[in-house]
Image (cartoon, rainbow, N blue to C red):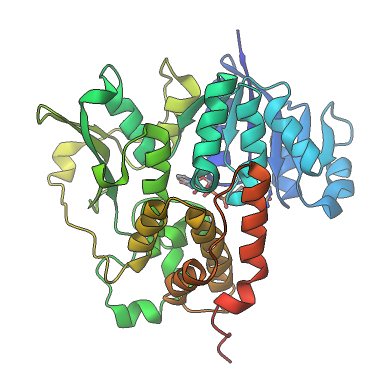
Amino acid sequence: MRRKISILGATGSVGGSTLDLVTRSPDRFEVVALTAATNVASLAEAARRTGARLAVIADETRLPELQGALAGTRCRAATGREALIEAASDEAELVMAAIVGCAGLEPVMAGVEAGRTVALANKEALVTAGSLMTEAARRAGATILPVDSEHNAIFQCLAGNRSVDVARLILTASGGPFRNASAEDMAKATPEQAVAHPNWSMGAKISVDSATMINKGLELIEAHHLFGLAPERIDILVHPQSVIHSLVEYVDGSVIAQLGSPDMRIPIAHALAWPERMPTPAERLDLARIRSLDFEQPDEARFPALRLAREALADGTAAPIVLNAANEIAVAAFLDRRIGFTDIASTVQRALETITPQPPQSIADVIDIDREVREKAHEIMPLPAN
Ligand SMILES: NC(=O)c1ccc[n+]([C@@H]2O[C@H](COP(=O)([O-])OP(=O)(O)OC[C@H]3O[C@@H](n4cnc5c(N)ncnc54)[C@H](OP(=O)(O)O)[C@@H]3O)[C@@H](O)[C@H]2O)c1
């Protein structure tokens, strides 16, 4: 029996790797729906190639273009919120959630509430609505499988063990392109330098998040919700080679790690095939060639975003939503050359200091808080340099 899969964010980096794996295993998967924001050409090409029955473009103005590109196929072109929710919750048994940012929250929740198996790459959805989402998954009997390489590694290291025997989780971090850069150099960093990740090939937003290291802070919040551990039992360890993807320490002192070459197709394949395994074309790990693995403590003075994320999680209110939204608008402004690299963390800090909403009771509340932060962007971001 082939599993029916929807790929949300099919035109992105994770979406593309998922399509690569799915089209290599046509006997395992049947693609039912694909979505994108604006990239009609890639979406239509993927829909034709996979035989998907639904293609959703979030940008409503591009629907006629998508309809034209899909003319003569059995694939229905659609747009809007309802269509995104349909893609996540209607026919699919397995949903790859690979939209970037809080924009993915509603479709992810739709998949969870429909009791689907959700392969979750879209970490911002869990950062902004963690407790609401894990509670909804419990109620609906949905399974959330982590795709982020670190969380996927932890998931693998936990297999066959009791959660009460876990002492701590250790999330590894590459340190990003500015691991050894001075604060002065970081202040002058360009978008081209920030997206040039030393080990991973990823979308622009997560690449900048890795450069500021807020990505590791978002992952800390994600790990807290996925695995139910208190934040003080989740450590961050810089490991520049990105070979060990994360570790779990048990009460007896044993430490279990998951290793692999830095290729997202490995954790994606794990989530797609779970509880089985499937082959991938990823490069095999050659430890004799790598020879040594290095580790160091993260530097929270040069990477303040890491500390801000830890504080937002400890705050226990709506702070992670504010942190995430402020980061999303600041990263977009940096990529657009309207603010500098170090302004990203200061924008997030200013947002956390000035916007203090009530804890959300529902997904609608999360979306309202996210919108409030975006509306206040002009108050929290520095003025553009002329
Ligand atoms: N890339 C990685 O290796 C990696 C690793 C771990 C976790 N993740 C997480 O996975 C998620 C996706 O990352 P990525 O690097 O694959 O991002 P990406 O390359 O930028 O792709 C993002 C996808 O989301 C779509 N999208 C963007 N804005 C949207 C909106 N407002 N509404 C609906 N769809 C929208 C994009 O469509 P268009 O192409 O039309 O813009 C694209 O298909 C992120 O949450 C990231 O943190 C990524």
